[in-house]
Amino acid sequence: SQTIHQWPATLVQPVGSPLSLECTVEGTSNPNLYWYRQAAGRGLQLLFYSVGIGQISSEVPQNLSASRPQDRQFILSSKKLLLSDSGFYLCAWSGGSMNEQFFGPGTRLTVL
Amino acid sequence: LAKTTQPISMDSYEGQEVNITCSHNNIATNDYITWYQQFPSQGPRFIIQGYKTKVTNEVASLFIPADRKSSTLSLPRVSLSDTAVYYCLVVTPRRDDKIIFGKGTRLHILP
Image 1 (cartoon, each protein chain N blue to C red):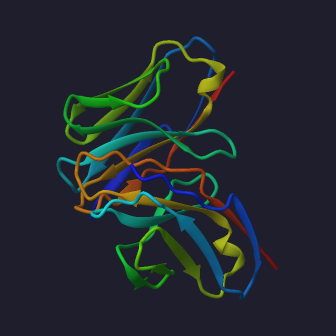
Image 2 (spheres, chains in turn green, cyan):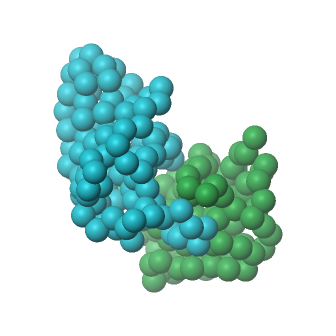
């Protein structure tokens, strides 16, 4: 069966510090991968999605970037965090013909 | 991408049937309607998906009229644990299609 991992689960970082969140998927190959952000009490905002290694589409201009160095690995990064980067970051994958999405456990990021 | 519109919030009581309606006026011929459920501090979870008429599983039923411009998620006999945000999405079954979540409907079940 397929599983999706995200780490860390929680993170507290100072403004201006770098960020690296990792997501890995097991049990499937060539998945579509997604990064979402959810601010407190708000909906999900699609940040990046990828249909293959090295293929990244950015949805929102910001100080975040994403990379897909391996088929089942998706990384979200920032060189300098802003206060507004605080939120709940979710990684998801889809691979079926109906694009059903499966979400990871999420990372709660607090920028102070 | 077809835009969806659903109520921001709804309240109901335990044991009641809850119906959440979603409108998607510009749904395309190949699009499917998909619903997700999200509990606090968790990622959304797929509930049900359909193309037309009625789909039922162990969690919910999905009613889609012939014109497919709207759909209704029906939750039978809700309990407190059904308190969650419910998202309606229109999904194109293509690998390269991105998936956008709207604001969803915040369902609050009262005792």
